Amino acid sequence: MTYVVTEACIKCKYTDCVDVCPVDCFREGPNFLVIDPDECIDCTLCVAECPVEAIFSEDDVPVEQQHFTALNAELSKAWKPIIEKKEAPPDADDWAKVTEKLDKLER
Image 1: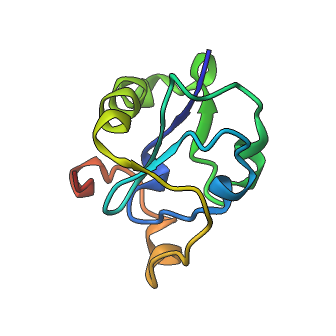
Image 2: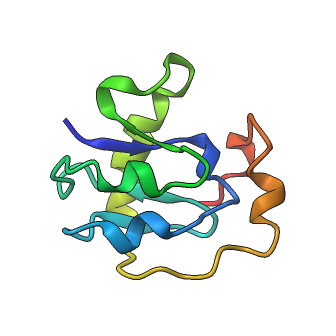
């Protein structure tokens, strides 16, 4: 089992989760983070750190978000690791309230 970053992270990209990850399993895209399922050790530390509640255990991903499991696996192979916290985008708080934003995902 691994953890999965879901739609709530798109265009928010808070990186609080990165700071607590003991194995550096997060990967960074232009406006989204993913978790590399091959690196994740299921420690759960990132879940509580996500201010938009975008991270779920693979078994607990909401039905309408389950496609993010495969998306995390795919994008984690293409994106570079992020190992330290960065400033969130200036409009992150505005995007945190938006739902259904998969069309805003930049690869």
